[in-house]
Structure formats: C-alpha cells, structure tokens
Length: 463
Ligand SMILES: Nc1ncnc2c1ncn2[C@@H]1O[C@H](COP(=O)(O)OP(=O)(O)OP(=O)(O)O)[C@@H](O)[C@H]1O
Image (cartoon, rainbow, N blue to C red; front, side, top):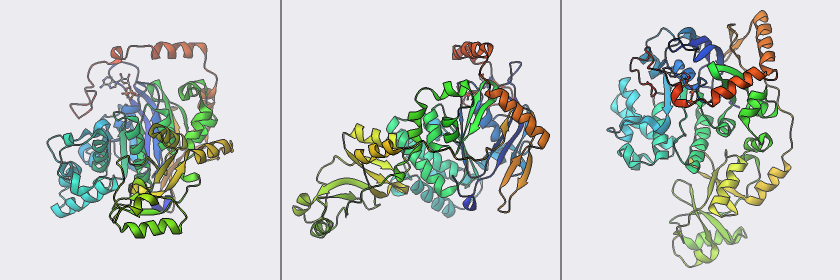
C-alpha cells in the first residue's frame, strides 16, 4: 500500500455520474466512485461494461450526461477540458505517440504547451526517459517507428508523466505487447509508482494484471454497475457474488500466488563483477566469497550475464564469455511470473532487479517452489473500502491533516448503500443469469451504435 506521507496524487470522486449515448440504456448509470489519492485502482469487467467510458469521463474526453467529477475537492466538470487534460496524464495502447516527432519531442509535448523553457524541458525529458529505463543519449532523438512496442509504451508513460500530473489514466496500456514485455512494463510501472505515488486509474481486460498492479480493483458489470470494490486479496478470498466468481474464473487459489512477490522470498547474493574491470581482481573476489560464479553488471548496475572463475582466469579485463545473457525478474514480480521466466529461459535461476533494472540478488526455481509450498492462507487484512456504488447517494468529503481527502456516506445513505451491496451479493437470479448470457454472446459489432455527438472529434479512439 502507498505511504500517505509521500502522496503526490489527488483523490478523485465520480459523483452520481451517468453517461447515455443516444436513447440506449446508459453506458454508465448513476456511478459514485471514490479513487483514493496516491493509489492504483484497476477497472475490470466484461467488454462493453463502461470501463473506458468511465475512465474518459475523468479527463472529459467523454462528457458525463449528468453528475460531477471532483478532483482534490475541485469540481472539474465545468472547467476547460484542454486545461484539465494538461493536468491529467493519459496513456493508451501502443503509447499513442506522434510518429513525426522524436521521442524527446513526444515526451516534452505537454511542458512545451505549458511554455516551459527549452532547458527545463530537456532536463525533464532526460529524467523521465531514465525513469522508464530508456537511455536518453540513445533514444532522445529517435522516432517512434525506430522503437520496439515495449519501448514505445515506455515513452508513452514518460510522456504522460512529463508535467508531473497528480493523476494518471491508463487505458489497456500493455494490451498490445508480448507477454514477456508486458511483464517487464508492469514491473516498471510498480517501481515508478513506488517512487511517485500518483493516483492511477487503469483499465484492463486481464484480471491477473489487476491483481498484480492494483491497490484496489473495481469489478464492473454492464452499465458501469459496481459488482465489487476491494483489494485484490479481498476479492480473491471473498468474491461478492457469482458474477465476480465467474469473472475471476477457475483457480482463484492459484491466482493468490499472484499476490506473493519475489522480494518476499530469500535471495542468494552472488559476488558481482563489472564489465571492463580487472579480471584478476574480480577472480579474487569470487575466491574470497567461496563462489565459483559471479553476476556480470553493466555500467548501470544491470545484470548482463554469469561468469565463472575459470573464465575470469583466462581474461585480463572482464568481457562477457557468451551472448546468452541472464534471465531477469523484477523484485516486484509475482512468484508465478518468476517461475515462468525461468522456465521459458530453460534456467534454474534468474537475477532479480529493482528500480531502473539494478541488480538485487539471485532467485532459484527451488526457492520459489519452497515459498509457494509455504504460502499459508493468512486471514485477509480488514481495510475500509473506498466509496463505490450506483445508488445515487452522494458521500461527504473529509480532509485529513496531511491534506488527503476521503469520502464517507451519511448514515441514511450508508444504510442504502449497505442494502444495495447486500442485494448485489445475493445469488444471481435465473433472469439475471439469462440476461448476462445473452449479453455476453452478442456479436461485438452489433454493439457499436453511431458516433457520440458529445465527442466532437475530441480524440476518442472509438468515435
Ligand atoms: N461513441 C460511442 N457511441 C455510442 N455508444 C458507445 C460509444 N462508446 C461506447 N459506447 C457504448 O457504451 C458501452 C460502454 O462502452 P465502453 O467502451 O465504455 O466499454 P468497455 O468496458 O471499456 O469495453 P471494452 O472492454 O470492450 O473496451 C458499450 O455498450 C458501447 O458500445
């Protein structure tokens, strides 16, 4: 969980928000949702349930039909949309970079609009490229098409952070990259968030991604109806109803493994050897540590290979004996991701990396398996869940001493919300189940109705 003293994010409240496209049933109906400052809230739910509509109402790429959006106590529903969007970072699939601008110019886009001077923009761009593990010297002047999908996505994140916005909206940002790159990007986001403590709202189709990245998960049903709002642990241990159970899918117990992280298990410390250093000195270090192998690090302390004492004795300065590289897992990786990485690489061990890819230690298949075996089903921590419902009731704001705003329901409304939640927790009726089955078997193409007149070419991908 985020440490409140370092929060740079803002509390967001969607206050009884409805969005109707034409005469159809509302895409989002009477949604009240508190997104706590400095935390990551994941939106999941079946296709067409209103996740993206809800996300885009926060930066007003989509205007709510009714209701208010309040960010850090300020009603932003009536403010100028362009000004609002400059204060909110936005990351979409494939980075959404402008192809005719260099990486540097893409990252510096919002600061330029905000009329920062050139030197400040340059410093900020380099700082952010470094934050997302791209060497500014190499990537600053490249064009997006000269980057891999994963690198483009990193630039997309850097660009969204450029003007240091308190809020970051991410719409399926890692949907278009391969699984290994996706895992890396997820880990990087965890590290970036541990440094920055932004308020992140993240739409995903992937429940495992929600478990991995979210402080909180909102499970939506059709019409932006909240089926459950809770921590990943709460949702996995106590799904609110059959809909949530079905959504989690089989193997909820196995998914709980997704909650255990590499940093929670014991790592081995192998001696480290720097590329280009004196090989005899490195060999001595290995001897003193009674180690037959060491981990080779590049100039940024990132692991690039294994090296044996025997190899070192044959060199004068340290170079890599082969190009095989080394499987790496981030310390925030889940144990099942770590196992995956080692199995795919055909290796029984992997180097563990921390922020900016720096070396932390070594993990082995055996340590992971032992940790998994030892995982006990500890009681889920009791934490109070932020406000989230579709009852129409509006919560009251309170401001803590550190300036963080939270929301509470008035007593009568709390009762109304409890009743609503209890009804949401009831077993699904046959009619609801039938409705859901009919809905989920719809051809998605039939579901798209005309253009939203409110969007007026505002940049929505769907319009
Ligand atoms: N511009 C639009 N005009 C008309 N209807 C729209 C428009 N955009 C979305 N909708 C409808 O609103 C509903 C919610 O769509 P939304 O994109 O928010 O869902 P989603 O949960 O993000 O879906 P997915 O997971 O498939 O991206 C859907 O029924 C969709 O067809």
